[in-house]
Image (cartoon, rainbow, N blue to C red; front, side, top):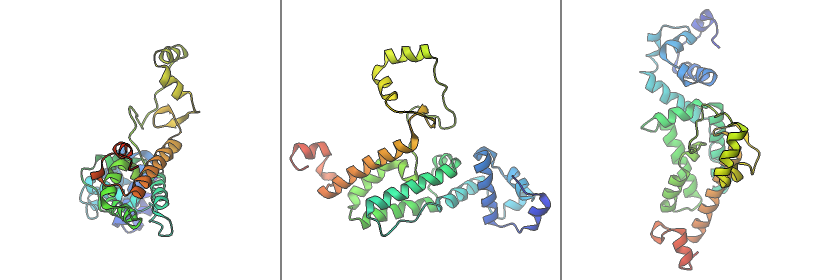
Length: 241
C-alpha cells in the first residue's frame, strides 16, 4: 500500500500525514499492523521521526480514533431530536464499517478521547434541544451504551471470526434440545457476515433495537418521566402510563 520510499521522502512529514497513513494501514491490514516501525516504513522515514508528531503508540491510537470520529455527521438542526439522533448514530455505524479497527481501539481505552467526548456532548445537546430532561437523558445514555457509536456487544459473539455451521445431524439434535432457539434462528434468512457467524442481518437488528429504544424514550419524554417516578411497569400499575 505504500508509495515508493523516494516519493514518500519528498512529501513533508506532519501529524496529519502520520495519522492518515496509520488509518489507511489499519483499514487495509487491521490494527495489529500498526506500530511505529511499520508506520515509519510506510512513510519512508526513520522511526524516531514519528516521535516529533506522536509521543508514543497510545497517543497514535487515540489520535486515530479522534480522526475517524470526526467523520460522523454533525447533528442536523432541521430534524426533530429523535430523527437527528437516529441519523447520527447510523452515521457513526457507517464510520465503523469503514474503519472496523476503531471499535477495538475505543473499547481498549480507559479514558475517552477529546473527539469522543465532543461527540457524546453534542449527542446530549441534541436530546436537550428536543426538550428531554437531563434526568431522562442520563438514563437514555446508559440504555444506548455503545449504540451511540454504532455498535453493540452481542452475547457469545466474536466479531473477528464466524463459527462454522454444525453438521446437519448435530443441528437437528440442537434443535430438538432447544426448540425455541431453533424456531427463532429459522424465522429469518441469515447473513453469513454477521458478527454472530451465521446469525441475523446485523444492520437490520441494529436499526430495530435503536428504533425500539428511541420509541420508548419518546413515550417517556411525553409522559414527563423522571427517575423518581419509578419504572414504566410501576407507572402503568398506578394508572399514570
